[in-house]
Image (cartoon, rainbow, N blue to C red; front, side):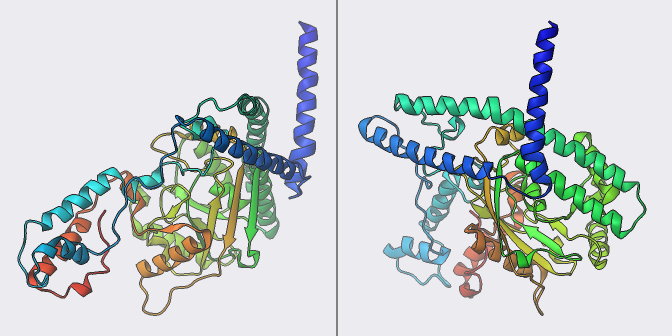
Length: 451
């Protein structure tokens, strides 16, 4: 029995030495020994081979179900006036000032059925479809036997991901989060000074780098000259809770959010000791004026870290950018837009909070191949004369979508949890009535339509 404990202790020492010497220390100094790059290159070659083998197998096995297309149905992009006019082609009448005809109802029936089958909102809260299988069973509903070699590679991948990478990543995550809590508490004991601020930044960025290594993260930062500066607001599209880890690897930010309990609460209470993060009680979050005042006070102090905000308010599946809440664009200050785009070939970074809790999600991340993403820092933007907060938010959102190659959508991401607002329904009613009673339709043609 003693011999078994000695072997286990030696194994633990070797394991800890590898973790500290080859991963943690290089991560703390922002240095890479190249192991991750080699791992990614080997992985890319393996996935390319697997894709070719799958394509060959699909030709050999005609009965193999094919992947469904991204779009289940093909929708018309015309306006309400154009589509109803097409329906009325057998009853040629001027729409403006015309009468209701029964065929008009077919337009609304058609739109309703289209959106029941496939709408622009709910499909943004499901995992992004892949062009080819990445040897993760959970990403291929049509997985079946294709060849012995492919099955062996898949089984070897399961062993590597669960028996080697998972323990390694859990070890790094525990060390990184433990150091974050302990380090921020110790720094918080120091009096306010430049030294305290420097130590706080050092603790934060070091711990986040260790956590990023725990996900085998490969991050490419572009246009670093546009990185957010103190006294500003950094806004980014939101795919995953690890967005914070991705951005904090290249700079420190002040976080904004609601006070939590449990492990998250422990982290919040510890890091706020060393850095002026902005945490709100649940009652305060409902008071927009109180939130705006605290944010204004924060950005007014040019010595404080830039605030990191995700204006979508929920995670979107790495294909689109949805409506930005206007609150962070009303308080003034300089906005630093950031676009984040993950490579789904190596793992699905999207957090479907309606399907997975945080623990299940993190387990999926730690058993994926890797996290590979690009981060673009866009030029700072300020509110223009005559521009309201909504217009400013839409301009920033469009810039982020364009840079990240994402679809720019005007829908509120909160629709995945809430019912459609009555005001959006009324817009459709007003648009149709304007056609019937003869109002100027052109004023309404660009109004947001409900799908």
